[in-house]
Length: 163
Image (cartoon, rainbow, N blue to C red; front, side, top):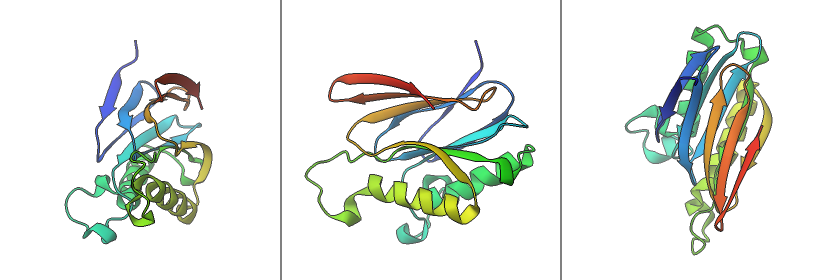
């Protein structure tokens, strides 16, 4: 069985060639994976909030989509990934509370928007996405292949998809 590195909220991990990087319980948070197929270098970020500056930039930079993605990118490049070959996959960003109508308070939607904007700004291709909705997600990045297995629970139904 491959070694598994579990990433918590506001955290990230990188690896090369073998093992699994996973994160559990993505609700309004987003999970972003980066992977270089040639060097088999990849990483996963579990970000809680969209932009550091909007929330005063206090605390752990991995807690925010914009600054966390910069950390993730820096560390996959250190392991030998090429920015031009990186592929991103994006998960989460669910709308967890139906009574919240204000766009400002729809953190999941804003997390997804900021993730896409930042990836585009960095010139990293987004090749797969499973975002929005109301359910929670768990994702597993396989460093040997770059494939991401996603398990989603919504309305009592469990689905698994590989991206």
